[in-house]
Length: 145
Image 1: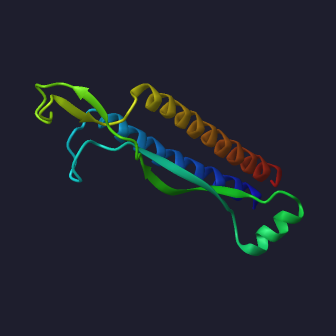
Image 2: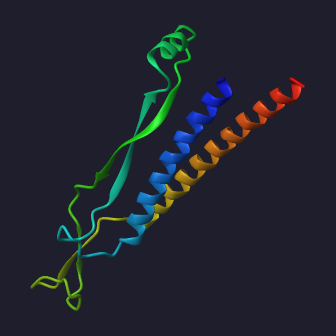
Image 3: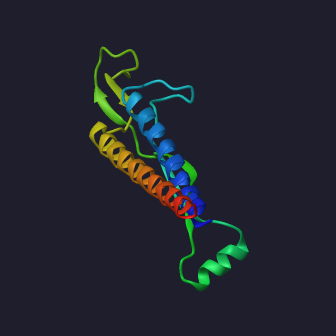
């Protein structure tokens, strides 16, 4: 039974990191987008995670008695950046104002790439944990033969 709990917790981590990778990809793809349906430049987005109890209240009570209350990860929000856009001087740009400045998204490509590497590593760690739990379950079945 605990093998399935471990796999379930790892699967929530995989799903959360997948959402994070999608948001980071959207940020990178729109790093130079100056027009959006809402008006103005694209606004950077970031994923907000939360640790939520795994299982029902009775299981959580039993797990607390051992001091090992299990938690899984949940995406609770995709936050839009509220910082002001970068002002870039480009009088030839179609979206430039009368002074020649363009409002560009406040996205720093290097920071987004670092976040993407971190998300990839977290995804790999959850995959490794899932495979370890699967391997232990298979060994337990082999012992039972």
